[in-house]
Length: 409
Image (cartoon, rainbow, N blue to C red; front, side, top):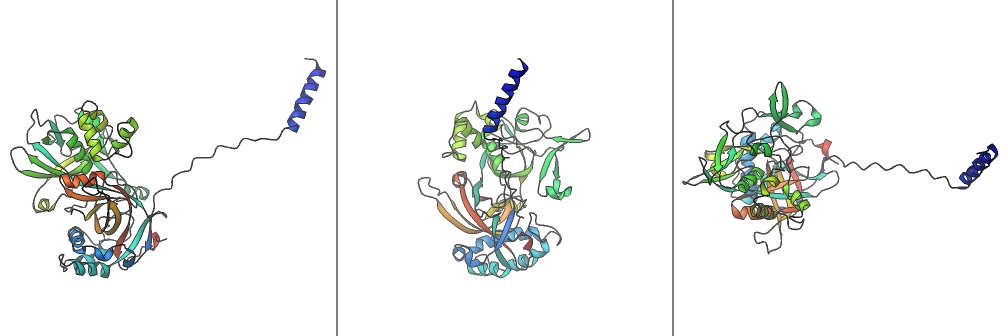
């Protein structure tokens, strides 16, 4: 192009640019990061607890006494866990006083809690409501030796399984645990559910008992404990011993994504029905949950009281609550205000306002306002627990004089 033509073209382009509005693309906004969960307490009074006076407080006192029996065996400097300050020493007076109360006198039990504790509303930042679900103790049919019918093994804890509490190494990881096994001096992940199902533990004599249903075994892994009814008579309680450290996955979400279930009808019962009616696809779906639980027998007087929770005490139906131990210690009284399904699915939900005790935990229980209600043993308890997925709130009952100012907002 001749120089004169090029000059004219450049002039025209500059004129057009000068007349056009200046437009600078806005930078893409960075996605908002979810806030890290944080327990916030707000002082309350017993009058703030809905339904407080109507509860059967003696039942909660019975659960609390079980926790106290465990707490009083620990050193005064031992921590209860979670972010609530204070040690066993702060709870000793209440536990010793509880032993002198009659669990059959509900009014006296209420006076005990009012005398020794102060209620605090628990929140996640400024959110007072959270998710509350239910769990129960399943019953399985089992045998001491494998057969064509009893061909699903429940395993005891492997000798090479190493569990690590990360909080011992970094304060930032307090409450976090991992598990694995040491290979050539390095801690490596333990085999997941699919690899164990494929025989990763075969030949190690780890089989504790044999059951007749892979689906029953899978739900036992979710619940953490159960009762095995033997084909030749008798029964024994089986309890959580350890986990493989792999992440827990709620397979209901995957069944929704597959179109097998909907958000409206997903429940333990609907998941079980789908697994049992799709035997060809069920193993792969269950193996999507990499978490795997190892068990032990629970015998003696404690076994007669009920299944054992993470605190090492027998759970009490309707009074034991599983919590997130990163925030809430075990053995703490908690006032729950939520709702739950009626035993009859055709009936509306019912309100549950009762005093419970934090005595258990679980892989799916995550957050400072999150709980899992233990409903008991057997089919009826499972019917309620399997359909419980409700919003609620709770108050922590903490010993009078305990300094929790760092958590109060």
